[in-house]
Length: 415
Ligand SMILES: *[C@@H]1O[C@H](CO)[C@@H](O)[C@H](O)[C@H]1NC(C)=O
Ligand SMILES: *[C@@H]1O[C@H](CO)[C@@H](O)[C@H](O)[C@H]1NC(C)=O
Ligand SMILES: *[C@@H]1O[C@H](CO)[C@@H](O)[C@H](O)[C@H]1NC(C)=O
Ligand SMILES: *[C@@H]1O[C@H](CO)[C@@H](O)[C@H](O)[C@H]1NC(C)=O
Image (cartoon, rainbow, N blue to C red; front, side):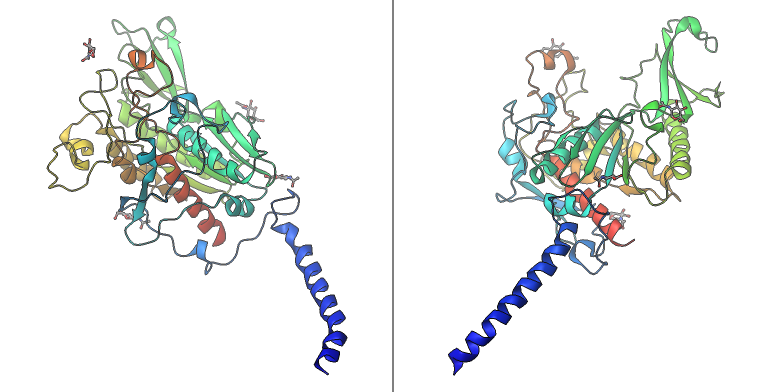
C-alpha cells in the first residue's frame, strides 16, 4: 500500500520540485554573478547582518590570528611595484598580515568580495585625493579581483587608474588630486604679487576651483571617498616655491600659511561637493594615514624597521612604543602632523553630509607595516629614503577596505 501511494505521488513530487526550481532560477539572475544585466539590486532592510547598527571601528586593538591571511598575493595585476612587498621580499610579511584589528565593542568585519560585488552590481566607486587613497584603491582592487578573474584596468573620466569588474558591472577608480583644489607652478617672472629674494616661483592654488582630474566626475560615482593632507608640508612645497592661495582669481591677502590654506581649501571643496555631488551619492572623507619615521624624517635617514606594532599602553617600558609620544603634536615628534590635519578635516566636515572615515588611530599602531627599505629598486632608498608612509600590500589598507565596505553596505541598506 505504502509503495502504491509512493509511486502515485512520485511524479507529482517531481513536477513540484521542477516548478520550484524553475521559480528559483528565474529569480536567480538578479543575484547571480554571471550576468551584468538587470537593475541595481535593492538592499535588504536593516535587520540583516550586514546592516546591523554601525560598529565604531575607531577604538580597538590588534591581535595575532594565524587564520587571518590575505585575500591576494604579489601577482595581482593592480599592484604598484614599490608597495608590492611580497614581490620585493620584505621581511616579516607573514607577521604583518597575521595581525587583525578587533574593534572595542563589535565584531571585526571582513569583506566577502563575491557578496560585496553582488550587492554593488551596476555601481561605481571613486577615490579622489593623494597617493594614500591610491594605496587604498590598490588594496580594494586586489581584494575584489578574487571575485572576478576577468577584472581589467580602467582609466576614463579623468581617472588616474582603476579597475572594472565585468561579472558585476562594477567600476572602482582613483582620481589623483593631491590638494583637491587646482594648482600649478608659476615661474617667478610671471609673479608680480610677491617680491621676495630667492623666490623661484610660486605654486598658485585656486582654493575655489577643484582640480581638473575630478571636477567633472562628481555625478559619475555612487560612492566617493575623498582625502588630502599628505602634501600640505614644506617638503613638497619648499620656501623658494611656496603655495600661494587665490580666491576668485585674486591672491588672498594677507597671504595664508600652509595649514590656514588647507582649511580654506577644505571649506571650499566641501561646499563644492555639497553643491555638485547628488545627495544620493554616498560620500566619505577618510582621515590622515599616520607616518612612522623613527630617528629623523624621510630625508634625514628616518627609518621604520620594526617587527611589531606600537603599543598604546602609556606604561610600556619602551619609550618609543607609545602612540601619543609619536603622534601627539605637543610632543613635536617627526610624525606629529596627522592628528593636527585630522582636526582641520573634522571642522570642515561639520554640518555636511560627508561621513568621516576614521582610519588614523588603528593605523597609528602599525609602524611594522610600511615598505621601509623593500622598495623593489636598489637605488630607491638612497634617493627617496625609506618609505614609512605608504603601506605594504597586502597589509593595513586591507583592514581599511573591510571597514569601508561594511560602511558602504550599511549605508546603502538603510536608504
Ligand atoms: C567612535 O569612537 C570615537 C572614540 O571613542 C569617538 O571619538 C567617535 O565620535 C565615535 N564615532 C561615532 C560615529 O560614534
Ligand atoms: C553598468 O552600470 C552602469 C552604471 O554604473 C549602467 O549605466 C550600465 O547600463 C550598466 N550596464 C549594464 C550592461 O547593465
Ligand atoms: C568639464 O566639463 C565642462 C562642461 O562640459 C567643460 O567645459 C570643461 O572643459 C570640462 N573640464 C575638464 C577638465 O574636463
Ligand atoms: C644618512 O646616512 C648617511 C650614511 O650613513 C650619512 O652619510 C648621512 O649624513 C645621513 N644623513 C643625515 C641627514 O643624517
